Amino acid sequence: MRWSGQEINEEQADALPGLARLNNLVRTTRTPEFDGITFYEVLAKSALNRVPGQSKMPFGWTINPMRGCLHQCTYCFARPTHNYLDLDAGRDFDTQIIVKVNVGEVLTKELSKPSWGRHPVALGTNTDPYQRAEGRYRLMPGIISALAASGTPISVLTKGTLLRRDLPLLSEARQHVPVDLAMSIAIYDDELQQSVEPGTPTAAARLATVTAAREAGFGCTVFMMPILPFLTDTRAHLDEALRRIREAGATSVTYSALHLKPGVKEWYFAWLEREHPELLGRYRSMYSRGTYAPKEYRKWLAAKIHPLIRAHGLQRGLEDPATGGVMSSALEGESVPTRRTGELPKELARVGATAVSPPSLISEELPPGLAARAMAQPTLF
Image 1 (spheres, rainbow, N blue to C red):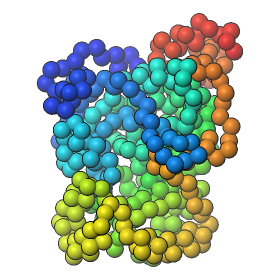
Image 2: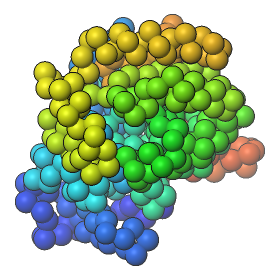
Image 3: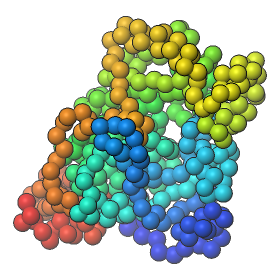
Image 4: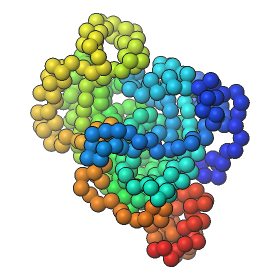
């Protein structure tokens, strides 16, 4: 789906109550390819989200092209975000997917504002931009291209192997801005993984994607998040996980214990009662005091996993405390392009010129208006 395929100008009246309140529903669709799933295609009013945090910058920026997630992870901390749309944090989050079909076009306009400071932007910190529906909607190429063309650093955290499709585009983007990639792989027992996160690719498929990213010249961090108490916190599981991570070529690893927000806790406990009822009492006791695992447990886990990380020759990865994604290398002292906001790299300013060889993947994804402006103003460079 290219930009021309996303020029939707009509709205549909039969919106869900929450979506009607937003007044931006275009179409509701279902397809045999996604049995049991309903897509609500909306016209986004904004693409960039500002997130307060404690990183080197006092805030972070994220983009969420979809709301809801086909990965269906029972522990997903983003589940309560569906409540705002009068949808529940359980099954609705897994099956009622809101798709911002014009997100690339809106993003391009936001990035062209003189006030935009080209702060690093994180993708995958709420719902996954490379969940299976991205294969249908193809939103990420436009987002990546808009960010790169504006001189904005990019970081991506995903469980989706569809990332491999965009490695050539990300490689071109890396010529203009810092690009940081991370793959989330928490569970290395196939049966458990398919039970607790049934919509995700296997650990083996995700590790192969890590290898593909490394072969394309990227560093790639693996997020072992969350570690599930009494299920994936044994020495044997952690040791095998880190061995496979190292074998895949990952450059670093980061981890955290499971935390359960209200709304998520109930959904996860329902899964636990079905699949591991013998653990339900221990979990209720552990999480009776709040969202996070007790400090004593976290200290115990750290003492177990840190020596294993060192033994496998892996580095500790950095998580951005503002966004929850991989820390952008732009925040670690690397230079960020100083191109004036709204300007394009030189090769993108020659969109359509025969001298460009090979053609720019970024320019192919830019909305027609931006490409036209680039062609009309080559003297800026």
